[in-house]
Image (tube, rainbow, N blue to C red; front, top):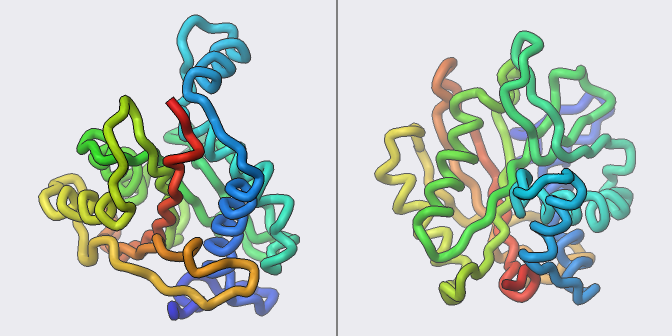
Amino acid sequence: MMNALEFITATDGKQFYIESFLQSILYGYKSLINSSKTYSRTVIHETIKRVQESEKAHNEVEDFLCTDLIINYVKPNLNLFGLENLIVNVGVRETKMNVTVGHLDIKFQVPSLSSEDYYAFEAKRLDKNKTKRKYYINGGIARFTKRIYYPETNTIVAGMIGFVEIENMSGRVALDQIKDGVNELIGTSTDINTTQTLMPLIIEKNSLLEEEHCKYLYLSKHTRDDDKKELKIYHVFLDYYDVLLN
């Protein structure tokens, strides 16, 4: 079991946030699965275009999936994990010297800490194809190591959610194989400095979660570009094979 002190030491004495964050996401996913809800890529794209009054959908599908998961399935259940006093938002601007440098998919803010102490999760889609795995690294992990995210804070932990899907009838692959594919690309990447590729992570058991929901948690470690500090990234792979439909 990981040491929660490595993630956060809060002034209110609650030192268990990392496991609680992960558990709240897993429980939200469980709730979504139990609801039998499914999504259509076509409907998502049409919804985005209609709302934006545009002929082209400018939002990514993962933005839609992430927002729905957090707003409808994670936030309503934060109290189950002792997180009822946290502020959790999606699509938050990340700024450096008052200039927008990116947008955080999920931001966990602890009110008892300063405004500079927050915890970010990035969401990406994954499948058997190399293109999405590369983007998981270059458009996800690298944004933390290059300080696009956390540009003005010393936070050295982050999270990522991988929505594992099938697109264009590419076929299903076990989630552990998806992880192995990501690790292969990390091993040859020149964009990030990695000291530990994605390794299985075991968290404390919780009666609200079955073992099957906690099978695809991983931890990777990287060296941040500017200050050379070790950055830990906690990865949650979610099986969306039967959730996101063509």
